Length: 85
Ligand SMILES: Cc1cc2nc3c(=O)[nH]c(=O)nc-3n(C[C@H](O)[C@H](O)[C@H](O)COP(=O)(O)OP(=O)(O)OC[C@H]3O[C@@H](n4cnc5c(N)ncnc54)[C@H](O)[C@@H]3O)c2cc1C
Image (tube, rainbow, N blue to C red; front, side, top):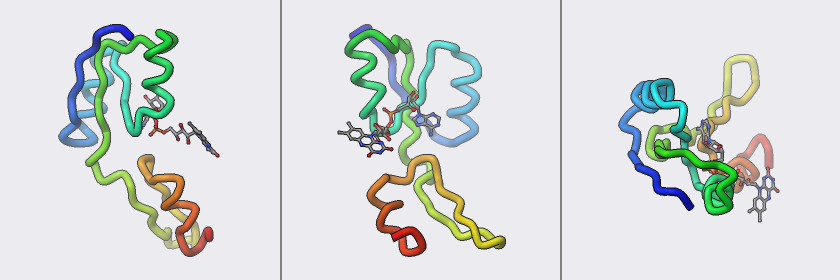
């Protein structure tokens, strides 16, 4: 695996700004896919932006009867969510 730097994003805006200014940066969530790809050097980001802790893990009902599913919602939480379960 190649060397990389790591930061825990402080806000959605800060994460987006860092990513926009660094083409070699990648967001990291759980790392399930990304870390394996980095170990094989298929993905070679020089900087990781951790987007955990930004409040993106909510499932909300929308006014038109739909669901807004956050980018960080766990598969298990979504699968057991009442309207889906
Ligand atoms: C044994 C096994 C079984 C699986 N079974 C299933 C299954 O049944 N169904 C299924 O759907 N999947 C399945 N998967 C895939 C699994 O769901 C994905 O690995 C997981 O969703 C990746 O999430 P992560 O948080 O680990 O992402 P990471 O590995 O952290 O990131 C993956 C990619 O998404 C990008 N990314 C992450 N978060 C964001 C964000 N908020 N905004 C923009 N880009 C982002 C990263 O930069 C990276 O390119 C399985 C995986 C394994 C290992």
